[in-house]
Image 1: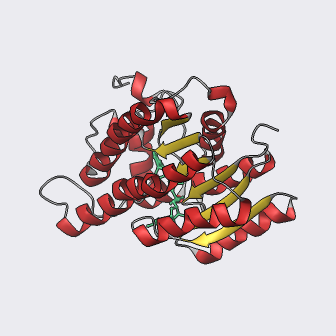
Image 2 (image 1 turned 60 degrees about the vertical axis):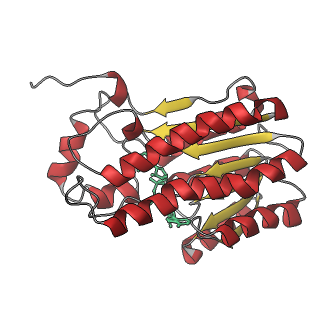
Amino acid sequence: MRLENEVAVITGAAGGIGRETGLLFASEGACCVLADIDEELGQRVASEIVAAGGQAVFFRADVSSAADCDAMVRVAEETYGKLTILFNNAGVMMADDGDAQSTSEATWERTMAINLKGVFLGCKYGIPALQRAGGGAVINTASFVAHLGAATAQLAYTASKGGVLAMTRELAAIHARQNIRVNALCPGPLRTKLLMDFLDTEEKKQRRLVHVPMGRFGEAAEMARAALFLASHEASFVTGTEFLVDGGITSAYVTPE
Ligand code: NAD
């Protein structure tokens, strides 16, 4: 097993990437603290893991709250004795996120509070726990949109993910000699609730797929496998990277057919 003796906190673990990562990490031997605001779905993921013979607890946490982030890390240490993997994955894409004129201040602030401050707070409380454990891995979910400008505007979301990449690089440099690796996972467009709610018509979905060389949306399980690599000792010399798992979208330009 690739994560034997590891203890992970996974945020946004009730659905999408977080859920699949919880299932995969637990099947690879990690004890998992599943953090999310969605109590019902989160509890269900924990039950699924336990039913399959794995170890997991659900903890209700809003990543934009310092008290909740502090508490979720303490749950890991109190329940499983330590924290060695921190997956800051929770994120939102607000329906009215648009261009500079149309994006409301409220949407800007909520997006930043969850997508950017949430990663900061996870690290603020999680990194001291990794230090107490003698080291570990941090994975921050960014996005391919932090690498490309898109005509389908979502300015607050894109800016928040750019911040996640910048923060990841700096944290990687700060903690590199403490046996703590910090990497970003940059998914391409995925068939998860977050994006399917945003691209809410077939036309919008097809408009996005035009840009993906593989011609399909990615799956949450494919991101979980990438997160597993970054979390595992197989990635022992990997830090500060922006791991693009995107079906080639950032490597191609599109010509009209
Ligand atoms: P999802 O909507 O399926 O899952 C996100 C989870 O985060 C949900 O369970 C939700 O309840 C939880 N969440 C929302 N706000 C929270 C908060 N304040 N505190 C704690 N949990 C909260 O989405 P997903 O596609 O699995 O997204 C996971 C991450 O991947 C996000 O950071 C997202 O921005 C990023 N991402 C997604 C795509 C995509 O196309 N879906 C592409 C690139 C990056």
